[in-house]
Length: 57
Image 1 (tube, rainbow, N blue to C red):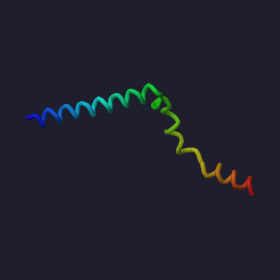
Image 2 (image 1 turned 45 degrees about the horizontal axis):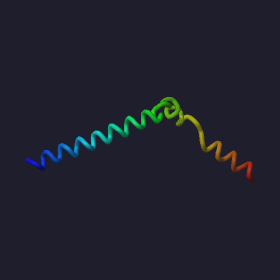
Image 3 (image 1 turned 135 degrees about the horizontal axis):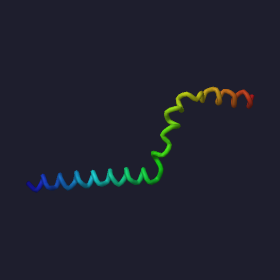
Image 4 (image 1 turned 30 degrees about the vertical axis):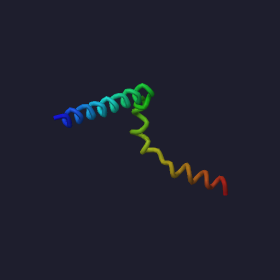
């Protein structure tokens, strides 16, 4: 029975740690920009890299 109580305490500690990490990430602004990632795939990064190579040659 003591093992069950130990497992419950450990699982609650892990859950609280994840909650604190989530709240910290929300307060630090990790989830503020939700538009840019959805359109980032539309931008062509290879075009910009090849133009830089042409300028250096």
